[in-house]
Image (cartoon, rainbow, N blue to C red; front, side, top):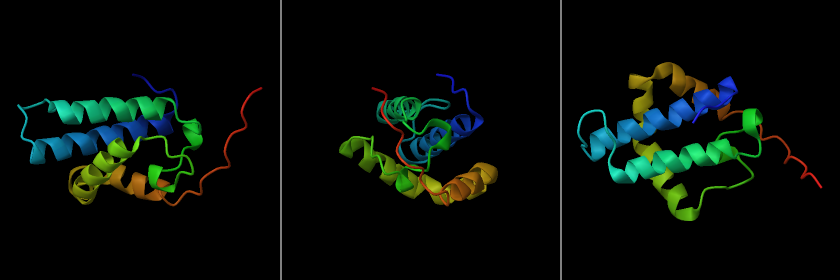
Length: 115
């Protein structure tokens, strides 16, 4: 799945790397692969990002007024990020800092629905 805007590409890359880091260190799949649970989470995160109403103006999910993840997936992402987030500074410091800066963004107003 390709994202047109650089902001969305970076957001997708960040979540994918976090999922890979979490899976590798917690679930121990074969090298270069994800376990079924983490693969499902990655696919779900991509889909939600693709359909985000804010697109390139997207705030981080923690600061978003629209909670588009279903509760069970939101909890899985929260657990994964709690583990992988602090480790991102060691493995991918530029993406980690970019994500922290994105978290300081103010959420934009909700887009108006087309009639």
